[in-house]
Amino acid sequence: MIDKSLKNLDALFPADLGEDKKAHAKTLFLKNLSLLAHRYYGGKMQTVPKCGIYGFNWFNAWYTPGVSMISTTIRDDNDTSFALSNRGNLVAVVSDSTRVLGDGDCTPPGGLGVMEGKAMLMKYLGGVDATALCIDSRSKDGAHDPDKIIEFVKMAAPSFGAVNLEDISQPNCFKVLDELREACDIPVWHDDAQGTACITLAGLLNALKLAGKKIGDAKIVLLGAGAANTTIARLILADGGDPAKMIIFDSKGSLHKDRKDIEGDKREYRKWELCKKTNPGKAASEADALKGADVLIALSKPGPDTVKREWIRSMAEKSIVFCCANPVPEIWPYAAKEEGAFIVATGRGDFPNQVNNSVCFPGILKGALLVRARKITDGMAIRCAHSIADFSEKRGITPDNIIATMEETDVFAVEAADVAMQAIEEGVSRVKLSWNEVHAQAQTDIAASRALVTDMMKQGHIKEPPQEMLQEALDAALKAVG
Image (cartoon, rainbow, N blue to C red):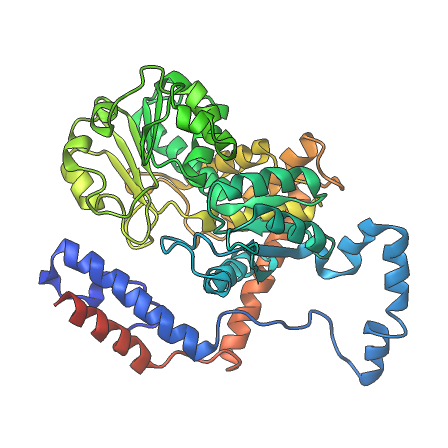
């Protein structure tokens, strides 16, 4: 019988399967199970009231005629909408589904699985309500128009306390984020870029501590120059990294000040900023750049051969390797370790050191919502990264355990409080609360969200998945890998 908790995925597979086949089988099992489970439950999210219905006359208070008082009060002071409706704890998860995980353009409704997933994680981990909004950004000629996303979010903003942008292809994602951060009076957060950057910086800070290195002294190579890695680079530099010791690669080579193809493309202004700052020696290849490098951060083409073993072998002593492509990392962790890597992190939860946005975005959004922030600044993201790193260090870190996981409940309340304090310090909050007030409220909301799910499971409102479904997923995976 398969343990429904799925605590030990490795135990499901024969010991003699081999590392490569086992990793592939785990991926297939989770994909098969995901399809079967989504069909079984009809998706992941539903809407339930947060108020009581104590008798039918309460509908006259919750709706007409009583609700007229709510409408006119908000009319006279729009900021009261955060307290008198669910707006103060509600996030819009917006995507045009043009870059869904590693699967590319999945058509507008194709992103619903991921967007519902974000909403589920926000609720369970951060006590934040969220709704998935997958939109069609195509213009009449079929091209994806970032201005359509911008206009949609501007129109929808009065209903939400924050917006989480997700799975929007580059370079459109840069324009969408930068314009909406300035145009909207609520936080607009791009989790693929800012969330990944925040959690990666948190992991890097602790990895460097364990390696006995400082961020300003480290030679850092980034493989991939998409929304995530360009934002990671920006936050590292803002937090003390040395641009002269940073080299970034896109699909055409390294970024440097002579990349005229990037300079001439107005849509690539974020990459051009990095071209002007980094890689003064104009490294020719990944192999050259990684010689003596302290850190590799790869968010590029799924592997496992995208990053070569010999590249890792050529890195500095106590090298740090983050290979975070999904679903398959650019090099398997065991292979990087065999070639001398001191610390290896991936984007997957079935390997040590998962670099997981889910440890970041529920907390940072919760903190922003609780003080009714008008935006999430880079300073707030960096504060969140240090909050996660410090929390992890206090409970103990090792080369195979550099960062907190989703199971460590209080990390979300702690980062919410730290982020809220940063918002207040930077003057972007509508209300001022103490650290303890934010932490306590976040803890209360998170506990309530988890209790709600647990109670629904216990009372049968959420059905248990049948054993046959888990076995079917496992059998299909084992058959596929031979």
